[in-house]
Image 1 (cartoon, rainbow, N blue to C red):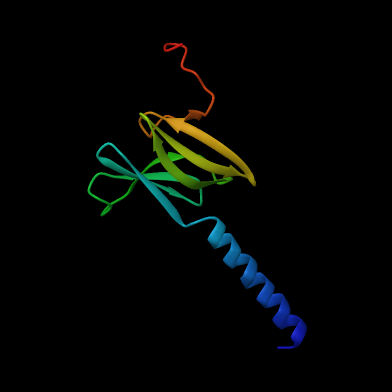
Image 2: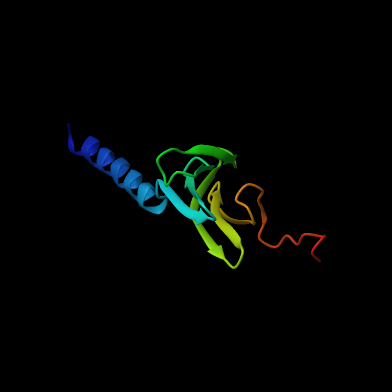
Length: 108
């Protein structure tokens, strides 16, 4: 391997490492008695047995990456990226998701 090929390979591995660091493989949060896990390929999985088995519940799509899941009051929030742009969604049950500024007309 010559110097140029070595530098190209090193750059590819460095960029891949940065991608893994910026986008953790899985993030998870507890919603009631369920664990919810977000993945880098835009899916949410849930477990009712403490993380032994995971079932798919939501698929935001392949262009999305779930970066964080967290609680505030009675809502759970998902920080996503879509083609490099940040998106935050909210849910009361972890199954139906709305944009962060959505107001339910029944509660307005």
